[in-house]
Image 1 (cartoon, rainbow, N blue to C red):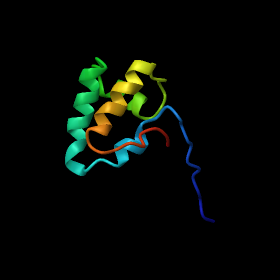
Image 2: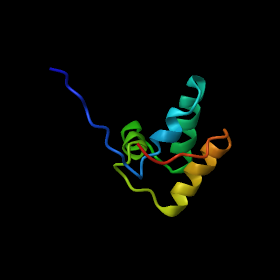
Image 3: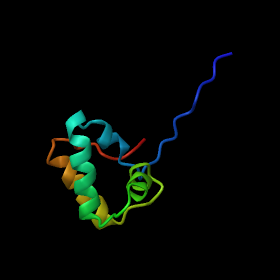
Image 4: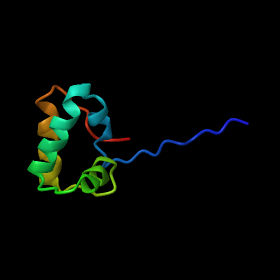
Length: 78
């Protein structure tokens, strides 16, 4: 019997944008987002990345701007 896992779509997750990054950009973008939002722990970052924390409008704009600098416009979801 094959086990399939449902993928939950979380509208406040920026996983869609993060998955579009080049391999070498992951750490740079994570650090940039953490610095811009004053996030001090990786757990807090991953909670935001996965949509467990709903971003304020200003935070969402900052996140979108960081991805836009890299040509990534579809950021939210997954």
